[in-house]
Length: 144
Image 1 (cartoon, rainbow, N blue to C red):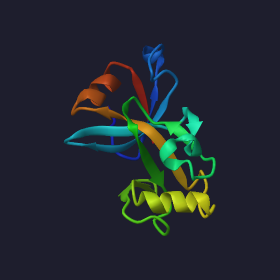
Image 2 (tube, helix red, strand yellow):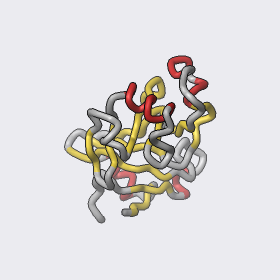
Image 3 (cartoon, rainbow, N blue to C red):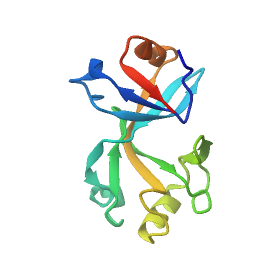
Image 4 (cartoon, helix red, strand yellow):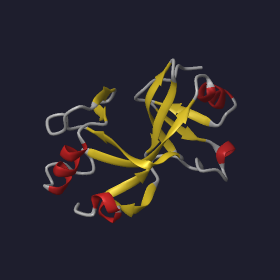
């Protein structure tokens, strides 16, 4: 089996039909001795950024349904370290997290667009060995 690593995508198989993960593609942003973390990249959230009370001063901006874990928080992936401080670099020129005030400012001033910044409600998480077992049982296919 090919090794899982941050920066790769996994796609759900028919084994996950009927679950939250039906027809999902997930970008892994962490895969290490602590476990794995990723975001569903193809499932829009039912609300826009400006519809969230905390961000009602923002312009309309799409949110993604990142996963079933920690749905009380907003997570950011971006390609703009020139505008956003503090993000953790992951593969593919992406950064996880960063200064949320700068994220919102870049969105509101339109200095960044949805190709530059993606916002997620929740994330996907697996304990050590759990994702490998799910791949082995046929729940996920890997792509780079």
